[in-house]
Length: 189
Image (cartoon, rainbow, N blue to C red; front, side, top):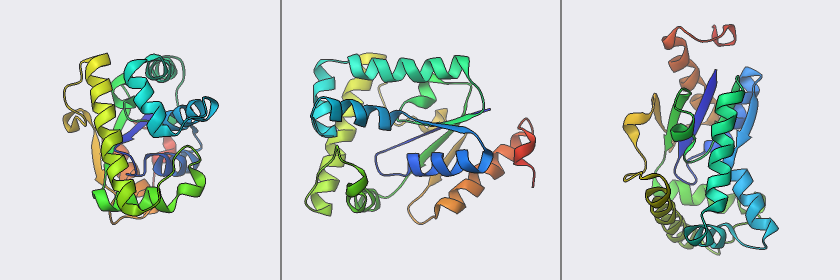
């Protein structure tokens, strides 16, 4: 079973994916971590790297093809990334959303763990996250013809993480997976 977690910046994709992978004993892959590493290697912040990607899509293509390959060649993992739902369509797809102010607060409070990002205030963080989302949308439209992101109808489960703990989110995903009745023993109560 593959669980693909997508959502806007700061919605908690990586946090939920890590917790879910640990709970299930699965591998975890983060496409955002790969992009952040690529940005650091070029000496760029993530916003600068995303801006560069609008002109040179090679980094997006690399990450997206990597996710696609994982979906074809591996099983029993949790993956997080903005477009993983698109590139691994047979996965159980979870979309996370959260209030914009809460997403900005989370990113700002986690800056010590985000060396490729730098914001001086929560309000600046909110502005930069909006810019990032618009950059993502432009790139997805140009590269893949995705006219609207996110695409809620493509997900098996949508979770508003604004007021939920990670543990509550994990339980919500596991409940939804149990309802499918096609999931492994690890999901039993």
